Length: 156
Image (cartoon, rainbow, N blue to C red; front, side, top):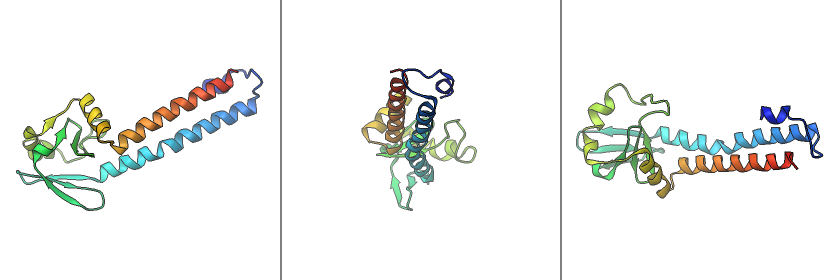
């Protein structure tokens, strides 16, 4: 954005129009990421629990499920049940649960669950149409398309 504002205007676009395009782009980028923030907040409202035999899932809205560990898929930061994601960590690898809760209560049960790599996790989320993944992918695609259109307008 800063590079656009410092570039001499050319091709018939004046400084006011150029500033307007930069401002419009910034507003669109903020607006596009609102669904991503919403779906991320929903995922963080979900909770996990265990009794040593089953895993208990609390969905947003208060619905509770009791599932066998074989029905779950996981990696180090997320547990998946169908199209629902249950984060275990933030993107900075800070645990969302108290120290050693996951290793004490969930890890022994997850031996029976399917362990996924990051790429397998993304593919599974895409297959199940995970709202957070779709919103993030859509926001990035929209952002790139918007930047391409702005760049084309500035260079004509």
